[in-house]
Image (spheres, rainbow, N blue to C red):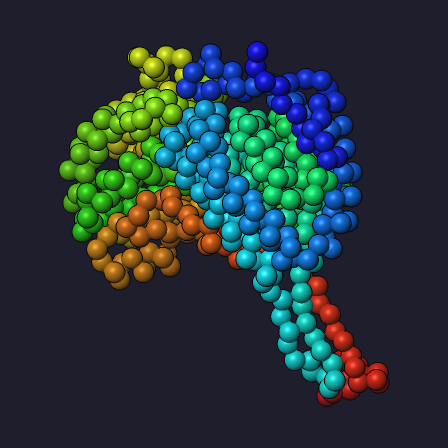
Amino acid sequence: MSKTFKNFIGGQWVAPASGEYFENRNPADHADLIGQFPRSDARDVQQAVESARRGFAQWRRTPAPARGDVMRRAGDLLVKRKDEIADLMTREMGKPLTETRGDVQEGIDTAYYAATEGRRLFGHTVPSELRNKWAMSFRRPIGVAGIITPFNFPLAIPTWKIFPALLCGNAVVFKPAEDVPHTGHVFAEILLEAGVPPEVLQLVHGVGEQAGKAIVEHPDVALVSFTGSTETGKLVGETCGRMHKRLSLEMGGKNAMLVMDDADLDLALDGVLWGAFGTTGQRCTATSRLVLQKGIHDRFLSTLVDRVKKLKLGDGRKAGTDVGPMINEAAIRKTEHYVDVGQSEGADLLCGGRRATGKGLDDGWFFEPTIFARVRAGMRIEQEEIFGPVLSVVRVDDADEAFAVNNDVKYGLSSSLYTRDVNLAFRALNELDNGITYVNAPTIGAEAHLPFGGVKQTGNGHREGGWEVYDFYSETKVGYVDFSGALQRAQIDNY
Ligand code: NAD
């Protein structure tokens, strides 16, 4: 018998209004049923938002340092349960344990950052242009925050959103991705144990078109933070625009690693293996394009193919696994489709390109790490997000052409440059159209205390992480206090 999980609404664990559930299975082994999770709809969301409004009324008045103490305790609990959470996360989404431990660690870092922000949340005090008058700005919480997250960082991404949302004094309605509801459940337990008051947090499981859509459309959800695909983000953005909601969108990527002739090639090889095939290519920051300068192109590519063929596919919970399964069958089919597209566009398939079979692989969603060479700028496999273990290799003459290839896509999350030329490295920071550029490191590797996000169709101008995310979850209010005892008219009596 598999376990049946519940939503957390109105301070209690409750069944969904529909009485319906969806299955959560291990992508490395279809026979392994993790549990049944609520298929919630607008009725559950209605209850959740009503409860969150009550929670907000109390939480917004809780001093920010006291809210920070709750985040610190949540961090402590994550530390204590790190290995257990990593294991259940790998079981439900597949990436190897080293990566899921890193995912939890990012949550821990985010918790401790939020805890200290409770004692900052800086405003400004500036001189008034009038005598005996003070002028200052400070931050206020906004209301009920709808939090909608993807499957690939099941803990880290919810923590990037929920810790700063709560720290700023908002109440939260959280809908985790339907492929990773177990991690969402455990995270909710931890928040409650850490001392988040019951009605301040609501956990609503379900599929995007029902539960997610209902959260976005609810008039009392004042702000929405969404991470997911650009296609879904567009729908979310249209609704929020129409309803004048505050909205943070973090969406797709088509990230490139540029390797110049003067690069440390061993370093770049390690970088591209990790960047392209870590998390089975299912990262917003995955390296999905490799741009090689002509002098090292052939040599680098042949060593890379040798190394990729040696990557060990398997269950992420087994020691020695380099690459886990993909998340589900739809992801496999999408990747297969792009392999067909690449071949019909005339790119050279150097390795992979099909489902992986064999011992330990037949019962899971495994796909062979895939490399396309002779990819030209503008081909669909060079332009579109595949979100699988597929690397498209483009050959360029020089750095300027590499920069142009990097920039000529609709996305702008991360980029990476391998070179020993310090002048070129700094020029790249200016020239590459991305939210993040790494020098001599792969396209992945964000740290919790720096702003994270992308330009163009990757985002809508907000950032997660670091100090900037606190701007999103709070409203600036200005206060003027005139203690002159007389009417002083700004811009009039002083000039
Ligand atoms: P997805 O867009 O399918 O789903 C994301 C979330 O949105 C899920 O919780 C889903 O249930 C919900 N959803 C789906 N339809 C909805 C709707 N109509 N209204 C409201 N919510 C809805 O994305 P995914 O497959 O889970 O994740 C992969 C995508 O996420 C990739 O495109 C990847 O690049 C992107 N991503 C971006 C970042 C970033 O920070 N930029 C980070 C991780 C993942």
